[in-house]
Every structure is written in structure tokens, then in C-alpha cells.
Image 1 (tube, rainbow, N blue to C red):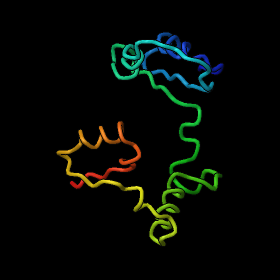
Image 2 (image 1 turned 135 degrees about the horizontal axis):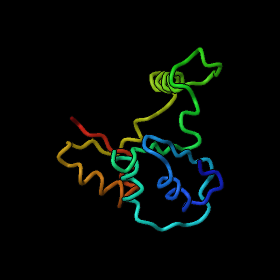
Image 3 (image 1 turned 180 degrees about the vertical axis):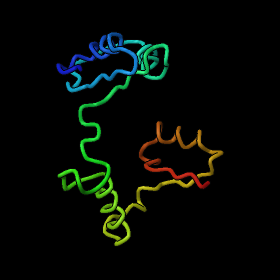
Image 4 (image 1 turned 90 degrees about the vertical axis):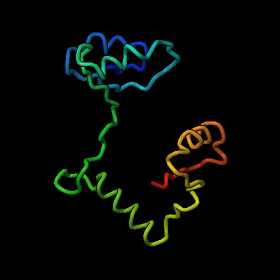
Amino acid sequence: MEAVGRPDLVAQAMELTGRLGEVILLGSPRGAFETDVTPLLEGVHLWERGCVTLKGAHEWRYPVRAGGSGSKHSLERNALIALRLIAEGRLAVGPLCTQVLPPEQAQQAYEGLRDRPADYLGVLFAW
């Protein structure tokens, strides 16, 4: 568990954590930390490097399903509320879509999102 907000300790925690362990990030990063992120991510993705789970402190703050958890909120309830608001026209999502492109133009879409964010607010692929 990293709880003080030192980004360099995340890499150290990954090295010290056993196979199938978890590193939980409670601290908010304070300051820059330059490193090769590949070894850190190999610790997450590769069996021989540990398959360590890296979790943020607020991950799954709300339960997935409504009811039974003692919480009014859930991911399911929040999604249903958003969909209802969209259906009622009270939450306008149309203006968020600035392009509809075929999948063959994925590179153009990603370059536009990266390089021209004012023009590429939201891109949908027409599958």
C-alpha cells in the first residue's frame, strides 16, 4: 500500500509485492517521477513478473449493482439515471459527437483527438 503520495514508491511497491498480490494507491502523487514504465507494467501483465493488481484508492467506490449494499448509489443506478435523462432529452449528448467515421479512419480520429481537441470533441465509429 502506498499512502504518502510519493510516486517513486509505486515502482518499489510493485517490486516488493508477491505474485498475484495487490498494490493499492491511497496517496495522491506529489511531484514528478521519471522512470521507464515498462518494468512496472510488466509486473501487472506478465505472470513471470507477478501479475500484480494495481488499484486506485477510489476504485469501485460505488457497488456495481443497486440494492443490498446499504448504499443509495451504484454504477447500475447511475447508468440508468443517465440513460433516462438522455431519453427524456434533459441530457443532451448529441453535441458531444463531432465526427462519425468509418473504422478505417481510426488513425485520423485518434490524431484529431490528440492534435485538434477543439474540433474532435467526440468521435464515433460507424461499424
